[in-house]
Image (cartoon, rainbow, N blue to C red; front, side, top):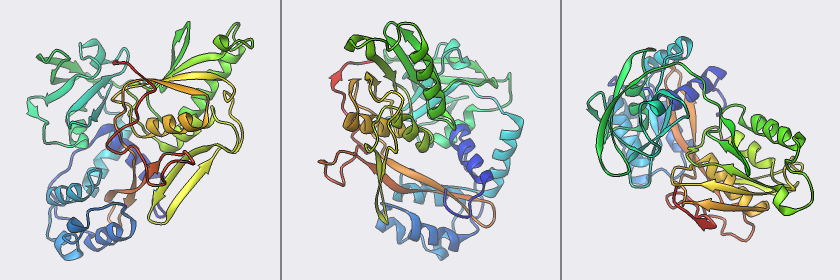
Length: 370
């Protein structure tokens, strides 16, 4: 987060992404600040749309119109008014409940649901990759991920009605009871062979993954011996929609030797290349990454780093295709502006410096549908 943003702002950014509070129609203050940030900080913003976002025009907009215009210039951009931020902070304090699932917009524009194991969404019958259609009878087709999250979350032990379409194309509606519950970022889901699943990149995922690998190193028979078959395991990134980019980088470093590229980030100032400072705990192990069409963002960054710099194969489906990176800026009235500020590039030294997976995804070495 840029200078001037506080720890509270980081919390707001996290909660906004996780809880998805919706946008409301208030007159937009701080118009000059918004116009300046778009001009100075945004990356890849449509210049034709940017011409309409000067301070005078922004001041005449309400939040809905501003968000429609922002999205036309940057599909990931959004404005979050101060009143919404206040409720988001209260949401964090009161631990508002959810259904226990991630949602992501796939390359075709459909909203896919990813229930966490044992969550209310899971036990209600929602299946991995089902297409979300309505929330409490409200059509979500034209709504943002943030707005949809706002509709889904609420008070604990209340029900939300989810209407969706399953893999057979059949529509169904189920009630899901909201609960306050923590779901792990990292879990061992297989032992023969060893499978470590990373569900998302939270605030401490890199350390959790390091600890899990360390436990495997100590267990009888795990990673023992010199035979290749004894040193192979699986990292499951299916359904990992991303999260904290730094934790994706720290997770990747566990499998890289010193000097290997972790990521390359291009922004308005050039290309910043980050390399592993030391060899990671599992740098000598052979492993396979499992990926699918819902693997996105920081998870794709990890795949790109390990395909280029580690002894890894990939298995599954072409990934979601999100290489753009966003930042959240706090405005003087307490509102927030989210903008794309750069894009991740493939780390390969032989690759074109402007090549990435935005919109196209990363193909697996071996293709296999989930």
